[in-house]
Length: 246
Image (tube, rainbow, N blue to C red; front, side, top):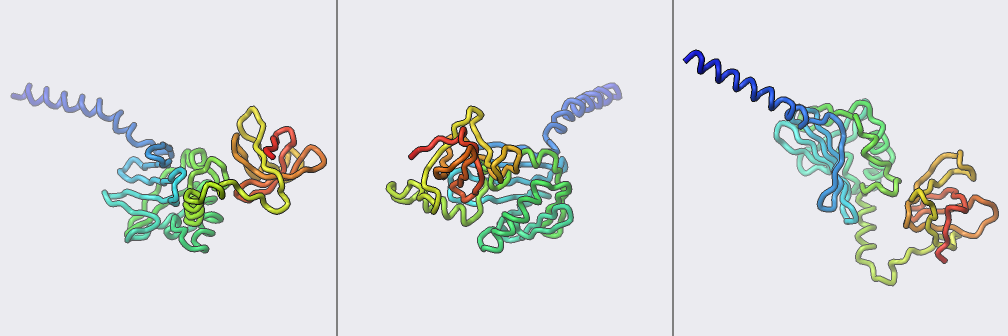
């Protein structure tokens, strides 16, 4: 009997050793991203059964949202019943993914998202509980809101997308902004071109234009032309990277 119990103990210990690496792999302790069903999900967990996810639908009239799971309960922003708060490096943001009002959207775009991308300490509070989440890999996974590849929208951006989606076909072509009389795309083997704040490759990068993305410009003197993106960003691009469509 004693030998049988000892054998059972050895088998149990062996199972624990075999399972331990799998348990360790289940918690990444750093941010990751994945794509499925038309949505990009940015995700992190702390290894203690707590997780945080940010969802950004692609090409659909739906704004970004977030969900924290702790103690088996789900808490969402925009809130469904219980509000969640993000505390980033000591600054508190109440229900930050609620962008349904102008002030809410300004808070999300100008304060919350830039702070999130640079976060060193990230806490999420809900229903009297607070969870600290890792920030490793966060700035590598999430993109600035003005990045052309960023899929995360505010409520007003989602509304605009919905109107564009259901607009008549003859209205689909973008209207040229005042002063910008030519429609153009980039011509760059790298697949993207940076827009600069000044007429110099050493000046600050204000936006990135990717292959196939249409923007606006006009006939100018010199090698650096002023351009404007469809989102309203204005900067300069070298003429060698500009291919006019008109």
